[in-house]
Image 1: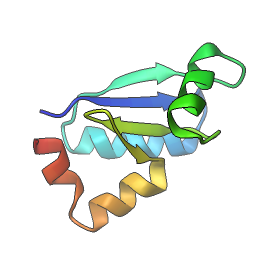
Image 2: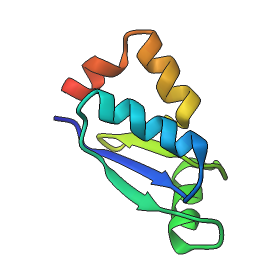
Image 3: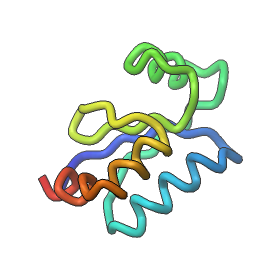
Image 4: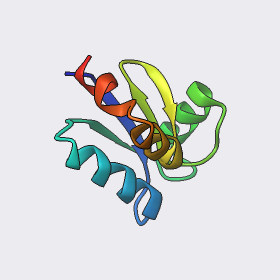
Length: 84
């Protein structure tokens, strides 16, 4: 199964939605708590160039945020990536 990392912060509805989608797929993921001002958030920005959360990586490849993950699923591309 794919290795998934997801940078999140508390009370983020997009983070909740992304995790719910991954949960519905039975995908295990490493959640990295990254509120504003933390080293984890800085790490996320360095890795992605983006300032928002969630930021999702599958097998080290940046997928994007929640909307990107949902779009990938709607296009039928998420299941093959998770199965790899």
